[in-house]
Length: 201
Image (cartoon, rainbow, N blue to C red; front, side, top):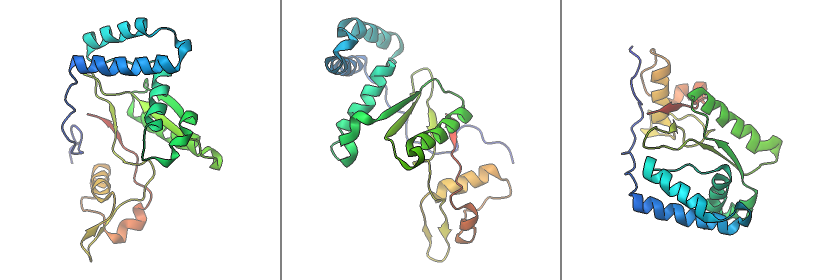
């Protein structure tokens, strides 16, 4: 069996690049909000000029740690359908944008779980990895959730259960001897053991 090339997961199309005018407007709106709610950050104009120049040069810009934390908290605050948003100010933001290696991303995901569960006293936590830029793809975590039961195919009913297609792909990639879709019989063998998979496209 030859090693797979590229990402074996089917993805949608890459997002369309944002027009510079739209990127400018969105950045200005965000920065004015940030500086308006954080007067100690100083006047917005110098930072806005820096950001607009960065967008013109690279197509995007990088938030400061303060802007990143604020953006994550405000996103939660403005999420009208989330009943937990009352605690938006307590959201702990872990800035992992410098982490680029796939194994380090996986290790930080495990640390996120340890930190957020906090020995049983749950802390609202978000871990932010590097975003996709015009120059470099972002890390891609295949799992929708960090912890989830493995999936299986029930041959009797013809129904597939959550994660079955990803589980089958992971089994094929990790063991040349396994090429079939996992069945109900082997579910207990893989239950809860779907590995976290991180890749760059």
